[in-house]
Image 1 (cartoon, one colour):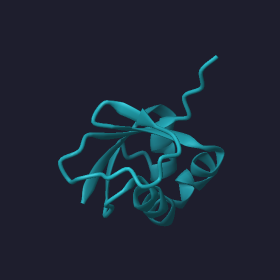
Image 2 (cartoon, rainbow, N blue to C red):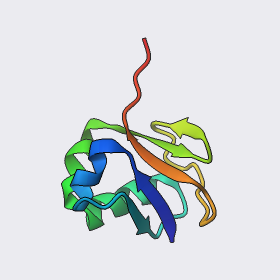
Image 3 (cartoon, rainbow, N blue to C red):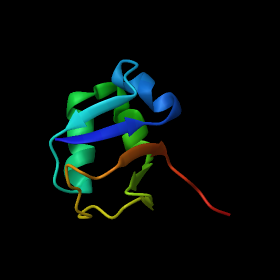
Length: 81
C-alpha cells in the first residue's frame, strides 16, 4: 500500500482525511485507485492534479513507478507561467 498525503482542500474529497492508503505500483494505478475509493476526488482528478513522489512533481507521467516507501503528496495542478 502506498501512503498518500492530500494537500489543502483535496482532503475534502476524501471525507476530510489528510492521508489515505492505495494499492498502486505506478502513478496511473494510484490515480485510478483514488478515484475508485474516494469518488469525491474525481472532479479534481479529472481537472488534473500534480503528484509529488519523493520530492519530484509529476503531472502526466502515468507509468512513473511508486514504491511503498515513496513519499507521495497529491496537490492541485501546479501551473507555471
